[in-house]
Image 1 (cartoon, rainbow, N blue to C red):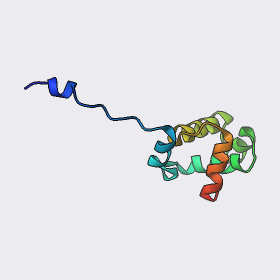
Image 2: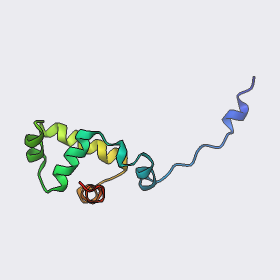
Image 3: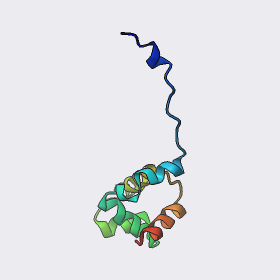
Amino acid sequence: MSLAPALHAKAPTPTPASASAFACGPAALAPREREALQHIAAGRTYVQTARRMGLSKHTVDAYLRRIRAKLGISSTAELTRLAVSLGL
């Protein structure tokens, strides 16, 4: 039982963030993440969004950070563009 072949196996090539964004897709968003995205895309601040959702602004921030991580998005403008494309 030799591990030598496994050590020399080719590692998978990483995909760019933009390509992986659609691998998990917007369907991977939780309902509350989608709701937070809808509020932000409507031009509301984190505090306004938090009040409407009955959350703290830190929770809204966490939702939006998770969305960015899941979809490889880095700016609020991209978040808004995503919301528009989803019909939110």
